[in-house]
Image 1 (cartoon, helix red, strand yellow):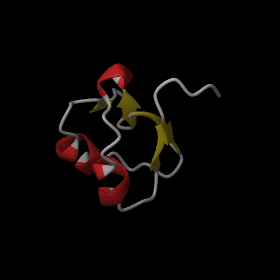
Image 2: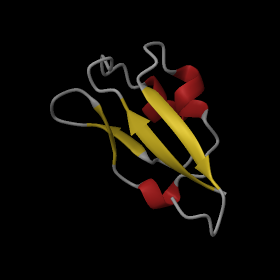
Image 3: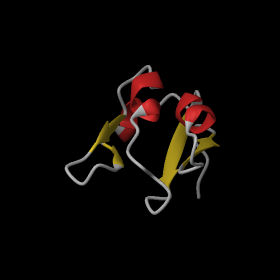
Image 4: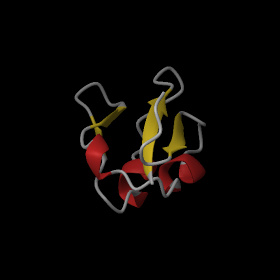
Length: 69
Protein backbone atom coordinates (compact mmCIF):
# COMPACT_ATOMS: atom_id res chain seq x y z
CA UNK A 1 0.00 0.00 0.00
CA UNK A 2 1.31 3.41 -0.97
CA UNK A 3 0.40 6.77 0.50
CA UNK A 4 0.10 10.42 -0.40
CA UNK A 5 1.33 13.02 2.06
CA UNK A 6 -0.47 16.36 2.38
CA UNK A 7 1.05 19.31 4.21
CA UNK A 8 -0.48 22.38 5.85
CA UNK A 9 2.66 24.51 5.88
CA UNK A 10 0.94 27.43 7.61
CA UNK A 11 0.62 25.15 10.66
CA UNK A 12 4.18 23.73 10.53
CA UNK A 13 6.62 25.21 13.03
CA UNK A 14 9.55 23.12 11.79
CA UNK A 15 10.03 21.10 14.97
CA UNK A 16 11.31 18.08 12.99
CA UNK A 17 9.37 15.46 14.94
CA UNK A 18 7.83 14.08 11.75
CA UNK A 19 11.25 13.89 10.11
CA UNK A 20 12.73 12.02 13.08
CA UNK A 21 9.92 9.44 13.26
CA UNK A 22 9.80 8.65 9.52
CA UNK A 23 11.33 5.18 9.11
CA UNK A 24 11.94 5.68 5.36
CA UNK A 25 13.42 9.20 5.43
CA UNK A 26 10.63 10.65 3.26
CA UNK A 27 10.62 14.05 4.94
CA UNK A 28 13.14 16.85 5.55
CA UNK A 29 13.10 20.35 6.97
CA UNK A 30 13.76 22.86 4.17
CA UNK A 31 15.76 26.11 4.19
CA UNK A 32 12.66 28.02 5.33
CA UNK A 33 12.30 25.77 8.38
CA UNK A 34 9.23 23.89 7.13
CA UNK A 35 8.68 20.21 6.45
CA UNK A 36 8.95 19.07 2.85
CA UNK A 37 8.42 15.71 1.13
CA UNK A 38 11.72 14.81 -0.51
CA UNK A 39 11.27 11.09 -1.19
CA UNK A 40 7.54 10.37 -1.72
CA UNK A 41 8.16 7.05 -3.51
CA UNK A 42 9.64 5.59 -0.31
CA UNK A 43 6.56 6.33 1.83
CA UNK A 44 5.01 3.15 3.25
CA UNK A 45 1.98 4.89 4.72
CA UNK A 46 2.80 4.06 8.34
CA UNK A 47 1.37 7.39 9.50
CA UNK A 48 4.00 8.04 12.17
CA UNK A 49 4.53 11.58 10.91
CA UNK A 50 0.82 12.36 11.10
CA UNK A 51 0.44 10.78 14.54
CA UNK A 52 3.42 12.62 16.03
CA UNK A 53 2.87 16.10 14.56
CA UNK A 54 1.86 18.40 17.45
CA UNK A 55 0.45 20.99 15.04
CA UNK A 56 -1.69 18.75 12.80
CA UNK A 57 0.30 19.94 9.79
CA UNK A 58 0.78 16.61 8.02
CA UNK A 59 -1.72 14.06 6.73
CA UNK A 60 -1.18 10.61 5.23
CA UNK A 61 -3.77 9.25 2.82
CA UNK A 62 -3.32 5.58 2.02
CA UNK A 63 -3.77 4.59 -1.62
CA UNK A 64 -4.44 1.01 -2.65
CA UNK A 65 -2.15 -0.36 -5.35
CA UNK A 66 -3.72 -0.04 -8.77
CA UNK A 67 -6.35 2.46 -7.61
CA UNK A 68 -6.93 5.52 -9.73
CA UNK A 69 -7.65 8.98 -8.39
